[in-house]
Length: 282
Image (tube, rainbow, N blue to C red; front, side, top):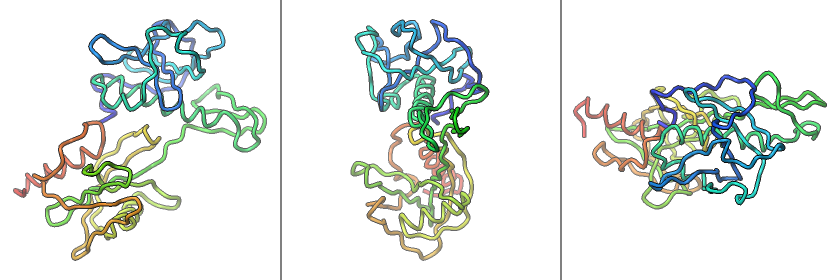
């Protein structure tokens, strides 16, 4: 999945330090990331030495992977000041062959969006400051503290009589199906969210809810928690025609070809096929 970068090791322990020329620079503008084109058509993350030499550009230590340190440069600058670099959509990272680049680039984007959304205190409106002893921003006037947002969400493989329920989101292209998913609401357990989301989106009651796996998902600042669940006997699935516009039940040999290997959705589908094979189905 997205976070599986072994044998590389991710270290998100917080500390402050000065940036060095060979540290990796994570720079963003909206939904774009600054990248360095490579001769083979791929991209690389730039180093701090590739950026404009401006005293006003504050570098914020974010995390390390192995012995490489990654710093966020949240200030904007003209591309002409960084020759050889290009702004690219963060969606480019999804196709990156370098799994460390994908992970680092997207985790940096997660932190960038959090930081940009909390430049001012939501309580008193004063400018926020980086907290000295942990990864958070602090209002020096009223003491309000804001941590990086991580929203829990579920994704569920609903099965019935040896088949898996696939659903097409209203925002997805025709023919592109996935699994039922949704954010956890206040007062809910994860299992409650599974039951609610499946009922709301496809009109099914489910039972035998079983935890499978989890993953960070910085594309939506989420922690995705994957489950299997069985549809109750005799229930008829129907799309809500708001979030879900099309559904279908598929056997293991009818699963769509994987779009990528970075998401827990693909792992759930693969696990459904594996379990079916182990039972001699499909």
